[in-house]
Image (cartoon, rainbow, N blue to C red):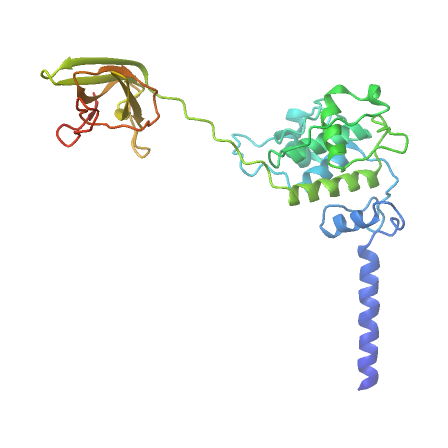
Length: 334
């Protein structure tokens, strides 16, 4: 019984050892990016070249392989796009084939703004500046990140395609890419598979560990136009003030947001009433208005639109106090 158990254990160990050797690339030992390549392989991002256990780290990277690495590594997709017709890679890249293994990656890359030239040959070798540019475009697709205001001096800056310089600078600032001992980037040199894997690993870690800058909400434009103010005396003490405007459809309205006072001037602040999102409105220009009342001693003028300034929306007495319970303001759409 013990012999059988020992034999089973030995066979299991041999199987696991064999599986491990098949899983790991056999040609990356002592490569500067060995650990990163191994991790990317375990993540299912990298696969071998030719045979399953050979990566060829010193080999040159083709455009097809490079774009596929970026798309897969950064998890780019087009899941949120609905197409009238199925996209084909030849729609954007006439030198490519629709049934090629790389076709889907180029479709995704194109629709995610990786800025790939239309005449790209998928079998062409990718330069360091090209890979840097497409990789950074992929990173920026993940969110709006903040970067240090710094410019890295390259001894071979004159060799860099200016359209790629910003991407290269950002990768250098993030320490995803590095200059050589002579402070050169060698932009026109073909990038090796090892270098590309190292940069991709750095990009993935950056996106994973760096929260994007929160989006700044832009103020909503005031939807009403041609605001007009008119007034008439109700009696010797009270003035009726009417603010009118044009609206895009009958769903909109207008209300008095507040009234503020400066000397003998009453600033009438208004804001829009927005349509019910669950209702449909004919797109017909509509006149809307709001009415309020102030003491006759004040001169009514239009204040800022869409903002509520400390004040009242009812009748204002001669001493500046509110009497809104006697005659509230009215919002009207017609």
